[in-house]
Structure formats: C-alpha cells, structure tokens
Image (tube, rainbow, N blue to C red):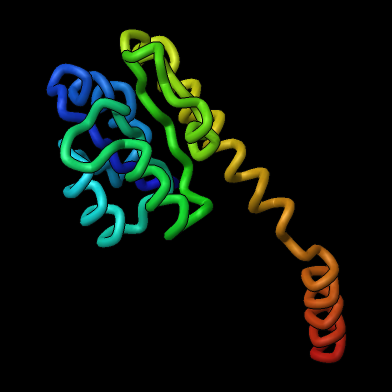
Length: 145
C-alpha cells in the first residue's frame, strides 16, 4: 500500500483529494508548501507525491527534482492549472492532471501507479531462488516422513 504526501495549498482541492483517496490509503499526509513537503517526505516513507504545481515557498518543479534525486522510485502526480508548464522539467512527473479535473482523473491515476508498482515488484522476484527453496523444503519434509 502506498503512503501518499499531498502538497496542496488550496483547501477545497485538498478536501477533494482526501475524499477521493481516504478509503484506499492508511497513510495520507497533507502539507501546504514545499518546505513542509520536504520535511514530511524525509520523515515518512512516502511512495507517491501529489503536488500542486503552484505551491509557494519552494518551486514545485524544484521540489519534485529533489524528491526524485533522493528517492527515484517515488511516483509523482502533478496538478496543473497553468497551461504553460515547463515541459523540459516535466520528465520527473509520472502523471500530469488538470487541476480542475481532479475528480475525473485522480483515482484512475492512483490505480495506474499502484498497478505499475505491483508489476515492478513482480518483475524483480527471483523465481529460481523460490523454486530452490521449495525443493529444499520438499526434501526436508520427505526425510521427516
């Protein structure tokens, strides 16, 4: 299960995100600016960051860059209300959602990233080692009987 950090200064959007994700998530953290986001990101085991690209104090793209440098596997969903996003820096963003359509895209985006994470974990499993362990267990069981 993912631990999610939401970086959103707008209370209405934060409440909407909460309503969309609360039934799915045990660890859902909310902060209102980049400085708080860095503290929470470093304190908790965050797997997914939902960030409004218009947060204050620390530029959102700088925040995303720092997060990806510190923990590259962290997934990023960015909320964008400005059509003029700097696309040369957006390669750190996994999914970009129009802020006025959070209710339409957020849950599906969350599920997509969750499924991607599960697939990645399955791809990294060493089935040969599991088979060897099973054979050892079977031999031990046969020797007991």
